[in-house]
Length: 287
Image (cartoon, rainbow, N blue to C red):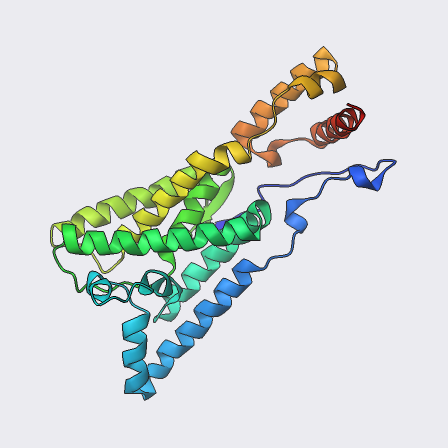
């Protein structure tokens, strides 16, 4: 079980003469996707519980909310997505939804709902496809079924860890470790578990799906997040707005942000960055 200790991304605003110069704090955005995803997962979970009373419903759920190479061979391609919203055991959905809420709520606010939803669905599809590949190619059994949000959640976790590598998270809800250390530890466990499964051992956990989701998170960070959410450089407009001493201080704080995250900034440093931001905005407006 993993959870964030606090919000890893915050902004501090100061009073100004114009309300239009105030910066939006991403953490103030309204969550939409994460609550909806959790609600859908709960509804599908309840449907699985109802299968104890209806054999027809059990057949519907088994044919449409489990994913395997055999399902895909029958043309049930939608199970690449629907299986990621499917849980049978209470502990499984509780764990996945807790981690989804802990990390997904931060990332949806930071990325925006549209980007978050696209990533979540892509990670879910990649995770399901990875399970099918592992089952058919590495384990030689096309009938191994999988379900659960773990793959998509693994993608969120690794993307979060790469964005905020030194932010403290709680492993099993009690052990504080840097986010990247915790995420890579779980990747290592999945690699070990997958190897054990290919040797005829291991336990019934979808390590292939977890690794597929984690790979999706890494690629998303490498190809998009790393540049999209990169701290701005001291370019021409910054030179117009800052003295040489302020440019040097800004570069120092940028390195601090990149290595330690926003939570490491002191109140004085946050005020400095906010003042520079307002000056840069005014410089842009005057050009």
